[in-house]
Structure formats: C-alpha cells, structure tokens
Image (cartoon, rainbow, N blue to C red; front, side, top):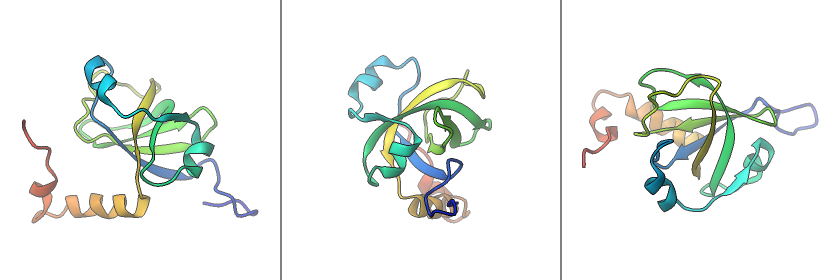
Length: 129
C-alpha cells in the first residue's frame, strides 16, 4: 500500500529469506554473511539480493509454518521465509533478529504458490543431510 504521496506505508509487507540458524546455533550464526542492520525504512530501500539483518517482534507465527511476520521498531512488517529454521520455543511478541537475503516479493510469492501444488510439493521439501 502507498500513502497519498506515493510512498510505501509502514504496514506494507515485504519478503526476506532467512539463512538457517537458530537462536542457540552460534556456529551457524558465525558462518552467515555479514549484513547491515536495518529498520523497515532502510529495508524498503535495499536492493533485492542484499544481505540484511532486521530486528523486531514476531507478530504472526503458526506452528509448522515456513513463514512468520516481524514488526520492526519503526512500525513496518517484514514477512520472513524461515525454511528449515527451527521455531520451537519462539512465541509471538519475542524480539528476534532475522539475518537473510531480501527477496523479490513477487518471485517469492510465486514460489510459495508452486510449493503448494501436489505435483511439485516434493521439490520444495527440505533436503535431509
């Protein structure tokens, strides 16, 4: 959504893919790309493909979901694709820092739709290592 002046509103939803690391996985965190810390306004300005760190409170979280929503300190909402990141012990209202790559929202949305098709679902499942 945009304001009358044409600027994105704070409640606009954007997408971000998170690299795999849990809150207690220090080794995985150390191996992640260094991304700049951003709020919603700076996230909106960042180029697709940028590695970023977005902090905020989890506002939407469903058991077994591969997506959650983070509300940033400046009032924006970032939809985060968590993939195979374990969310056990994480509750709505928890402050988190998501480290990941800013995704093309339209491309991400199409991938989510494709992942739900029965004939393609297997292609989108996490690989057991």
